[in-house]
Amino acid sequence: MENIRQYMNSVGQAARAASRRMAQADTNAKNHALENIATAILLNSAKLIAENAKDVAAAKANGLDAASVDRLALTEKTVKSMAEGLRQIAALPDPIGEISDMKFRPSGIQVGKMRVPLGVIGIIYESRPNVTADAAGLCLKSGNACILRGGSEAIHSNQAIAACVHQGLREAGLPETAVQVVNTTDRAAVGELITMKEYVDVIVPRGGKSLIARISADAKVPVIKHLDGICHVYIDDEADLKKAIRIADNAKTHRYGVCNAMETLLVNAEVAAKVLPELCDLYLHKGVELRGDETARKLVAQMKAATEEDWRTEYLGPILSIRVVANLDEAIAHINTYSSQHTDSIVTENYSKAMRFLREVDSASVMVNASTRFADGFEYGLGAEIGISTDKIHARGPVGLEGLTSQKYIVLGNGQIRL
Image (cartoon, rainbow, N blue to C red; front, side, top):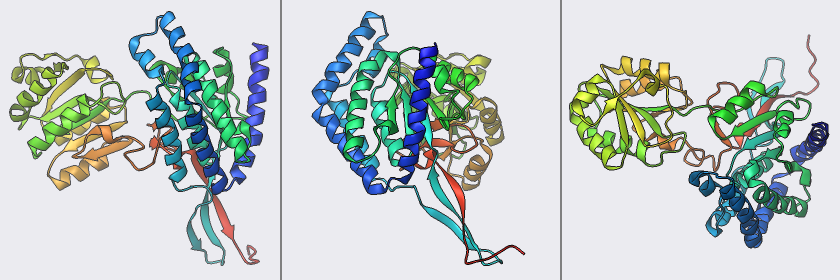
C-alpha cells in the first residue's frame, strides 16, 4: 500500500509540473502533438492489436462476458478511428486564451474573462482502450495534464497506446508526463488518485453506475459525472404522430446499452390509442420487452405491468416502460420525479408547449421533436466528449474541450487607482 501511495504521489507531482507547461503551450504545438500521436498510432497498429490480443485472451480466460470482451477488442478499424478522432480534435478551435465579455467600467478599467485550463484531470474508465487516446487528446488540446487509470482488463492495450501518446508529445516538444497512464492494476491506485487534492483538480469517471457511485462517494477532488441515463420521450396530443413514431423508435432501438437511450415513453391519453399499437408493434418486432401502466396495457395486450421501480430504472437493454398521462403538466411532473436529469424530449407541434417543456424540465439536455440519441458531444458539434455531466455546477451535458476549462477575470487598466 505504501508503495502505491509513493508511486501515485510521484505521478501527481509530475502531472502538476506538466500542467504548468501545458498551460503555456501554443495551439500549433498542441495540434502538432495530436497529429504526431495519430501518426504513431497508425504506424504501430499491428503492435497495438497484438498487445490488445493479450488483454482479450486474459479477459476470456477470466470469464468476462461477451459484450465486455467486444468493448475491449481493438481492430484495424478501431485503431484508424482512434487516429481520426485525434485529428478531429486537432481541427477544433483552441479554447485556451479566449477572451470574452470585455466591458468598460466607470473607473476606466476594462473587465472581462479569459478561458484557462483546469490543470490536472484524473480519468478513471473501464474496458474500452480507445478512451485512452480520446481522453489524452481532449486534455492535451484544452491545455491540461491528465492521469489516466484504465481498467485492469486493458492494461497492455492502454500502455501500448500511451507509448504512442508519449512519442507524439516528445516530438512536439511537450512533456511526456502531460499524459500518464497508471501502470498498476492495484485498485488502491484509484483510492489515491481521487484523494490527491494537492495534485488533481477534477476527476472524470467513465464506466458503470457502481464505479461512478464509488468514485463520487469517496473522492476528495471535484467529480464530473452522471450516474444514470433515465431518459424520456413525451408524445403530446398535438404531436405529428408519424414524426413521434420515428423519434420514439429511434430513441429506444438505435442502440440499447447507451446512456442517452430512452427508458420511459410517456404518451398523452388523447393520442395513446392512435400511436401506441403501431409503435409497440415496432418494439415487439425488434424484441423489446414492454412494461406499462394499466391504461397502456389495455391498448397493447403483450405489455407486462410496470412497477414503481420501472420508472426509476435505466435498463440499458431492450426493455421499455410506458405510461399514459393526462396532459403536459403530468408528463413534466413524471419526468422531474423520475428522470436522472440526463436527456428528455417532447414531440409536439405546439410552440407554447415546447417552450414550457424546455423551461420546466430540469435536465442537462432537453429536446423538442428530436431523438434523445442526439445527446452526444459529436452531435452537439463539440468534436468529441470526455463524458456527460448531470451536475449543475461547472459542466452540464456532454463535456468537450470547453468543459475541460475554466474562466478567470482579467482587468485591463491604464494607471487607474481605486478612490
